Length: 389
Image (cartoon, rainbow, N blue to C red):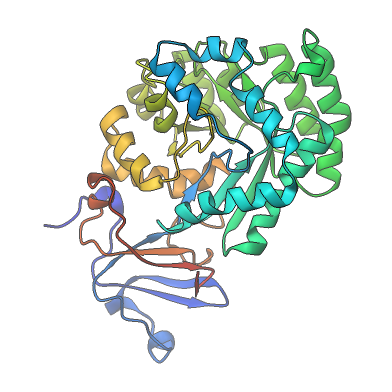
């Protein structure tokens, strides 16, 4: 049975690669004669996709929050756990106390799990340091992971993730501190690809988020946002006014927010792992997003508290079963739309001439199998810039 047209599947296809870039992608019968004598690798009918992209993770952190999982099962809410000193701040304490070497050692197995399923690009946020030393330490560790593994790493500054205890009751002062000291220092060291903020009742207001974005734009950095996860504050619409790369979570996104994102070309990154782990019931407005032409990405949201997930293939299934995405939409969500969410759509995320030869090869015949199967990894091989990774 042929796969639906939505995948863009090419039967009996060929990809020609030189110097890490795709030179040709299409039907084998159309392969230009200039490439016919090149060394060949026969993939024996396997499915070739772009290397997968995890566009929203908190992969670098210290400690564990398994007890909070138990507390939620016992009836505590995310907000109640945070108010009692748990949540993000418990991870902040553990991350501040950990050495860079310890953070690297703990992050590598999580990264390896993603790579083992075909990931070629992974975004990693800061946000568990919440002071100058801690934020810089996290970003350095994130960057350094690419020295240990064949992977493209994008780093996002998320100092506006939570209010640290030393700034209790002084959120505006903390935003000043981030904008004047921490973000400029991280940017000067070349550690920041984008700036994110958690705009929510338990985190930062619209006005505070706006100030963070203004500081980012002054440094020439693109922005992203955690928005409309627990309530509708209008964060996604604010981010769209700053031409944000993405607005993430967006369960409570309204029509005005959808329209603003569509006009700005902002990607909606859906995070089914957090939705599942928190036992949420408010689904993101997938039909409205579709209707408005807003690109939809999927990601693990790998983090210790609300989405301890390291499987993009599981996110494919959850995106379909929980959010009613089609399998082709879900696959686009961890390839081309995830690339858009990182500002990398011209570099990776699809198999096209001129792009990096980042590829994943799977032992499946039908692309829908990637979303259909649960707890099964059919990856055969992974290529980054044309070489096995």
